[in-house]
Length: 408
Image (cartoon, rainbow, N blue to C red; front, side):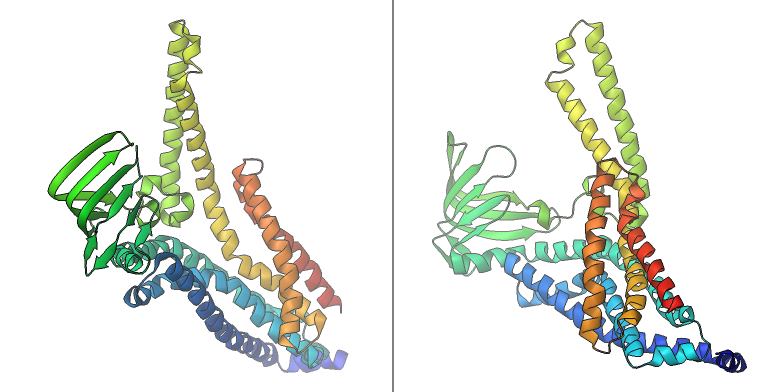
């Protein structure tokens, strides 16, 4: 063994060549697996959107670039684990690991390329997650919104009806762009309004994110009681549902905000929470001062309390969101931290057997702990960084496995 170590010392370039060799093997499998898994996820996501929205061929082509970062953020952890487990499982199964160790090179040096690869990949995964939120999902919504006119006409030609969150249209027939005897029910905001007409036509107002329904010789009723007739042409704006619109920044859920805006929005939400507290305190004090204690728990008081609770919940989510994004991104590193030594211990050249041994325990351990930490953080039971619970658990197990490989 002493002579092997002397041999390694006499050839200082061996660790460097070994690192390059392992990195090259990891990258070859990673690129191929990433391409295959990304294409699969793209087809699933686009296919689901196609079935749900009824997009045309041109819209499908336009939607692909926006779906790409969404697919990559899910593909990175699995493909990193697959590449590392395949390379180290094959090296251990073919006796390469034993040969390298016999030459006096530490097992930690063998694992080093995988750790470097995963550590550099993790920030890229975080960036892809942020890009999916700030550019991908809004882009998908934009393509769907711009295609809504074509979607509605296509569905009405085939099914003679179209239903959305905010409205529904039933027609007797569709001739070109002309809707014959349409019946339209608008149920977004207030009492539902039902319109019937001899014919109609739909156009998209992209600037105001509404559908303009032009009716000829229409009659309408609101709430089943107020009725009216409108001879000639009447234009009715139909607001699109929230799923198709780009929401205002102040109303966007934290999971839809890019990282660069979360801190700014958190400060704004903190100011809103303080303002809500002051408003509730003023309302309570004025009610006591005017000897109206019932007003404290009245409708206005309950509305203020509800507003304060919503503001606090959103503030908590804004505090959690950056921790969640980084935790999900660095799952690449912690997956590899377990996968590489576990593959070496398994000693099998079969790719899928090695990957199954590494992936299933990691999957069954990481995601339940991640969801547990996320839910506990949302309930303010644990701090926001509690979302790293799954990563910490994988890290602890990975250190134990690496120590076992080192002693083997």
